[in-house]
Length: 205
Figure 1 (cartoon, rainbow, N blue to C red):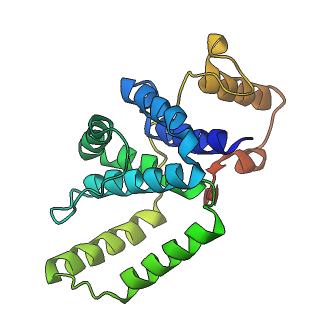
Figure 2: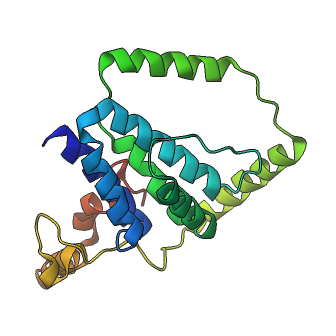
């Protein structure tokens, strides 16, 4: 897989996970990825990480957040940020693509490490209201974990994938076919565990 393919695969995964893959903005993001390829993977990764940072900040509805210039068309960035404000959970899902981007060259890695060290050493006072909100969130999450609920819907797409063309339902069609096959042979729940995860690992049961 070429570096360009690695970058776009990560972008496409974020778009599918957020449910934004069928929107026009996805096409403009793809065009940017193709046109910026000559500038190198390090440039593309840097731009995408800044884009994810912007989208995540808007999903949080943070008043103190300021957009970082990221080298991608302003209307594309504005569109994705607006979607994140309207659909925070999908904004977070999209921003997770930054974890699957290819690693930058070693010389770029040093710069990122220095930047992270400076950020970690800079004091950032947190308001009492924010701390109280965080405590409430943790308490509610701990309570909800005792009675986990299955999500009403999962990210899906009828776009083509390696295993299944779009004419047969794409990703949705392939997953449905896989599920019917497992049901037909009387598969038990334990056989589904390795399928119930993502790039971060298997989901907890």
